[in-house]
Every structure is written in C-alpha cells, then in structure tokens.
Length: 68
Image (cartoon, rainbow, N blue to C red):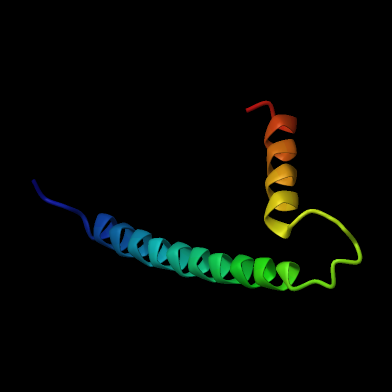
C-alpha cells in the first residue's frame, strides 16, 4: 500500500500534538500536586475541605451538569 505525503505529514503532526498533550498533562499534574501541598499547609483557620476534595466535587458537578 502506498501512502501519500499528506498522510506522512498528518502522522507527524499527530505525534507532535500527542507530545504536547503529554507535556501539558504533566504540568497540570505538577501544578495540582503543588496546590494540594499548599492547601494542606494552610493555617486551618478556614476549616474548609482539602483542595483535592473541592476539585473532585467541582468536577463531579460539572460532569453531571453535562449529562454524562
């Protein structure tokens, strides 16, 4: 089977996009871990939920709102 130059370009572009996605996800995970660390170091005056709990609730609410 012969492949066109366009399919080669598309494959290369998809690889680039995949790499960008993985880089962004790594950054997001690192940022979330840092936010969690900071929220656990809080002074306790607020008595609120941990950041991970608040984020989880917000994501669940958003998912339910979209009808998934």
